Length: 77
Image 1 (tube, rainbow, N blue to C red):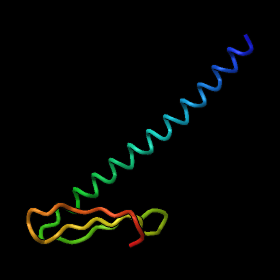
Image 2 (image 1 turned 180 degrees about the vertical axis):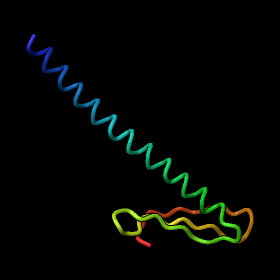
Image 3 (image 1 turned 120 degrees about the vertical axis):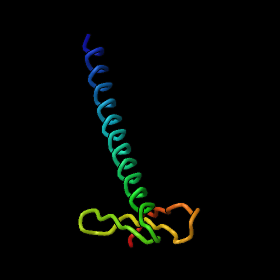
Image 4 (image 1 turned 135 degrees about the vertical axis):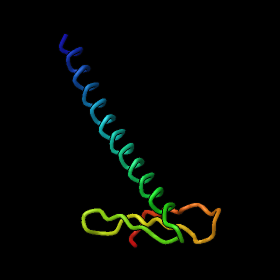
C-alpha cells in the first residue's frame, strides 16, 4: 500500500512537470506566431523586436521584396 502511494505521488510530480513545460512551449509558440504575423504586416519590410526582462530577445525581419518570408532569430538584437 505504501509503495502504491509513493508511485502515485511520483507520477503526479512527473505529470505536473510535463504540463508546465508543455504550456510554456505552447505559449512561446503562440507569441512567436504573433510576432511573425506583425512582421509580415509591415508594408515595406522592416524589423520587429521582442523584449524579455528589458533585454531584446527575439528579432523578426521582413524583406522588402515580395514573396520572401519573415525571419525569426532568437538572439540578442
